Image (cartoon, rainbow, N blue to C red; front, side, top):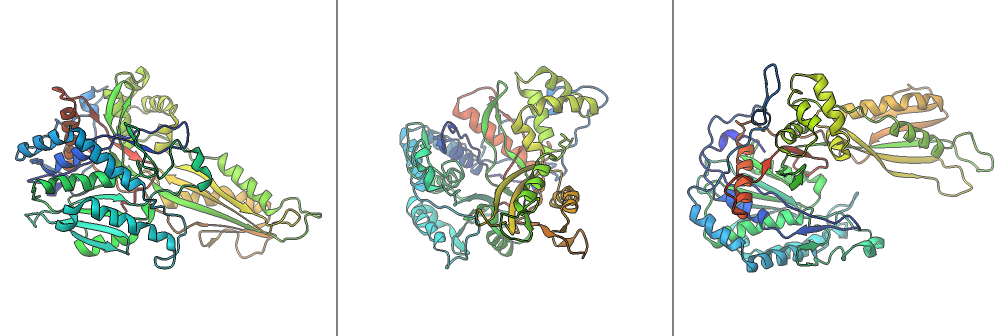
Length: 530
């Protein structure tokens, strides 16, 4: 999200998700829920007068003692349409019908049945035939959403990227940018029998749509397109322009970003919404957890070389043996993790302490004091880190995911290689990860008499060694953590998002009182919003 100051007269967006999936076998399934469609449509027809908007992150200064829930995690009021109340009631009525739900199922299931898989290290478009999987998907979208394709401007970027532009009636207002990705994670054919339902079946069991992409991220793409199509069916004309950008290579959508920058300019959008958190039950409460930050990313490649020969006369340590010691040392020395104030997961913890009825008493008590007490913060951290998912969202994670070496059982391996994946904490950076990795391997490289270079710089100097060790950015895809979205009471986009989620959730359940709490979180992966 960006530039809350521009949302002065009308605000028109935000999707949420409510996804459920079974982890007993290899599965990916999306629960049939109208909320994604509803939140988009509600926000599109919402008028919201936002004043005193700023880009300043919320700084909670609590004085000298413990604070109450309202101070720790203030909640906005539900945000319902004013100008377009009649339209919203009409849409709400539509969303509640079986006909609409079957339409939603058909649209998502049809998208899942087209296997738009993208792989690491794909060749150029036009040379690698695997890219051609996106052509039938584009044809499907054209058939499924005829009003969009007859009304909105469409640009195809780098052949398969899609950018739709719905021009607003007031061109002085910055447009909204809604994004999703067309591609899905590849499925190993050898695992097809492990799936509850075939990965590209789009099978609907009466509650869930099954298949790769049903959750990540064709559900998001189809919900955006469906909401826009519904608005067009009712002859809605947005005041503010709307841009839809759908990439086809989730973590490498640089061409799409370059197109948006060249076409619309720098800081051109009022608000950017991409995939993120969901609605879930935690500690006895119902929470929407939109992501306001995104971790950074780097794959560190380790490559070792040493003289070969016959394995009947081996050295004390082969390249594979040396690599193994390096990797064990790395795993035994993870990044020291600390829950820091003014980070998204600290705000998340504050909100859980304030609004989750069944959160451990010690967390509730300590988080009320954590703003001014390091001891209280540490005590809360110790309890919160018992949840490995929470801890992983706070820390820079590291995972050794790829390893290779050797070509024959009786030949000494001249080369060995491994790749360590890192998801970088929001308060860290790519440079910190590089510096840490370089330092961790230095002593072992010296013990093995290896000539050591790290990220293009010599660590051991020009003196030749028995072998070599080099570190590099494996695929050239290193990415610093994204800027953190402001979440203060003055942060217009987040307040718009939160109020819209609340109104949609409450309306769907005919609740007279607020039934959901909106709390900031972050995504552990990378959405491609860079």
